[in-house]
Length: 106
Image 1 (cartoon, rainbow, N blue to C red):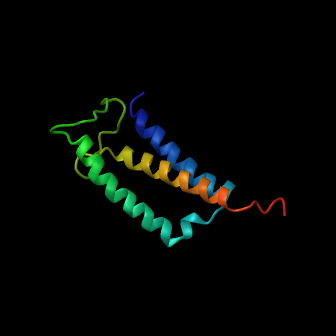
Image 2 (cartoon, rainbow, N blue to C red):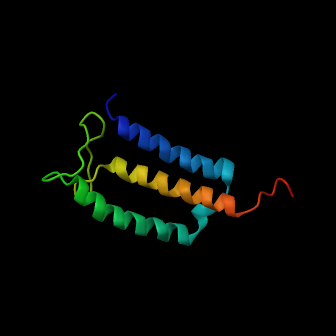
């Protein structure tokens, strides 16, 4: 399947948002601290991922059939940003959920 990584990363991002909005409802997306965290994560991701995936001397190579071919900035496949968003956000959502007692049992 062409764009396999793109499809998987996009589905993961959508599911992550839906888990927050429909299931966990932690309010994470309304917090300035979350968006500050994501800005820091993406800044480091650009630096590291840009070095790892640079086209002129890549450390990591993606199969052409697996990605969309859209790269920005510095040759980073856009799918990596979706994956990073999902991974970090879902981790933070689950962290928030476990540190707060459930209201259902109260």
